[in-house]
Length: 137
Image (tube, rainbow, N blue to C red; front, side):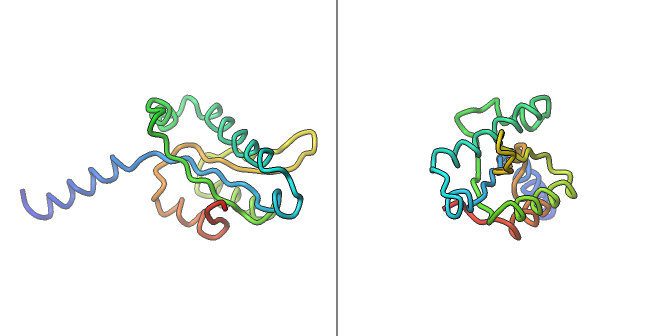
């Protein structure tokens, strides 16, 4: 096998083996400024994650993700406030990345967002998240 063929095969193997990842984004101001309890903030992330899995349950990536429950990958991120969550949603829509923005009721407050499981290292995903998010702390 030539070195070019070996490099192409390695690139294909890497792309295929990259794990599916769900990205969950929570507004940091819920805890800091609005003083929501930690459990309530965590619940918002759970709502968004559960909802997007249900919405995309027929999608091939979601089915693959759920077929191996012991090896799920998730990244939990924070964004500053409602405005930055909305801007992230706009970028995800532009890149046709499936997501669910959770709006807590009856307060009607957008609190979190979760993507469908996807290959997380794509340029579209990196671009969407680098501007508006950091790891949740």
